Image 1 (cartoon, helix red, strand yellow):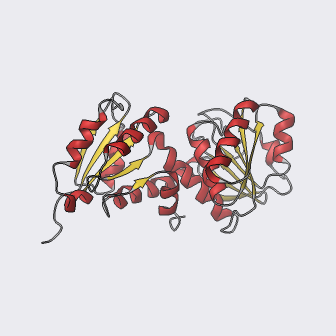
Image 2 (cartoon, one colour; image 1 turned 60 degrees about the horizontal axis):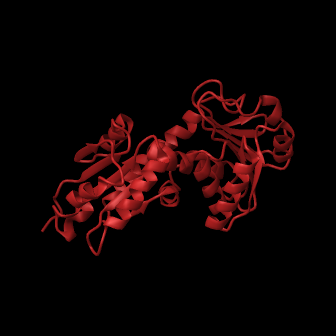
Image 3 (tube, helix red, strand yellow; image 1 turned 90 degrees about the vertical axis):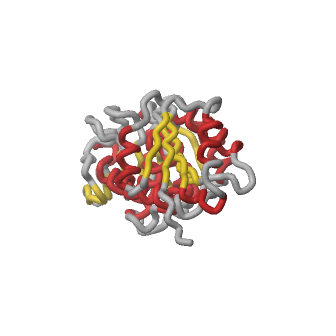
Length: 291
């Protein structure tokens, strides 16, 4: 019989009001039906998952999928963990985790950087500013997976040091922590860096134009802050692999176009089977040919 059942995406959001942004992307990705739930917690998500699992036979479960989102990434991660433990045997559906856009943004940033250094990050020294945030952590993780040696920055050097240890344990790549609030520590890091990604909060400037423009050895800068002032002064939001004095520059909107393509493709990929968990690494792989 033909595979003619409608696709259903169940949006599970930890915020009271499910994200309109994520809903619009789902519609643009051609999902047939979108069910939206807010205030999702590890305590109430099990029955929602059961509703997805027990309404269609195992052969049709690839036509149902889950999207886990919300502004609080840690809460969303706890929901994802509960979803994983709820699945059993053939009773499972594919899941995309993209709370606060963290995975699709991080994948887009890593792939943008990869494209601007000629297709390989093996051994490339990179620095991620504000790396202890949800997006920064994932950017650093993905850069390490791609072969870079990564300095992870935070206002608190102790926090960045602990993050470096965790990321090394997770990926096996080389990480070191530094304080991006300490001028001398930041300067020492930038002096030996070929790639800089700024993943700070909206409207927070982390480095000035004088700190990066014309710097020997620096090849790429990526700023993920779309709200003025730029996280990296001198990078425009619309920059997309723009040459800024011999250094390739990506702004938040330049990266954002790629992020949107990856987001849509990831939703579409959910319906190819019923056993995918699309986290940062899986999302990165889906976007490799979209740069």
